[in-house]
Length: 167
Image (cartoon, rainbow, N blue to C red; front, side, top):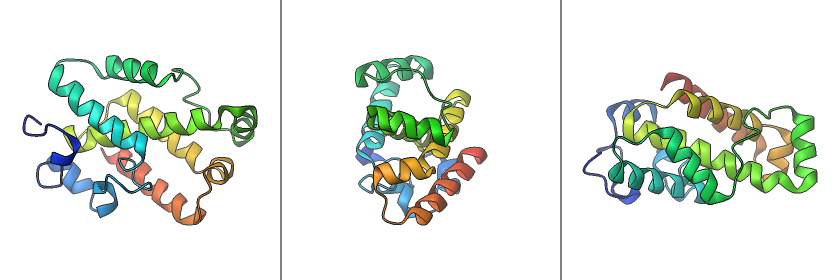
């Protein structure tokens, strides 16, 4: 990682070997594609922030990074396991939809940033990201986000879950 100074330096050739093995779809390397976990605005920002954090604090903990990023985003470190569709719908109706999707984009970006940089995902990050994937695949979140091809998005999310399970 010492040769990667920002996200634009990152590509399959200089990523972790396990990332090259797991992330074979070009979608994962497109930092401008909203369907990519590293292509959403929040996912790309998370990748950039994590690269900076690792350069500045190579021995820093993932927990410290998560805490600092959540605080800087004004997001609570809670509701990670919210996957019940009814409760998700209620949260969206109560005005918390953007907070939920921002946190989902953040944690999914974090998980895939770890894959491309380190070839593995912290257990807590993986668990949170898998819950985020489950949430993102619900009718409530798909409708809230306005995905044109909901079934296609569910397939992408399923593939992301598979990759996290292998990482």
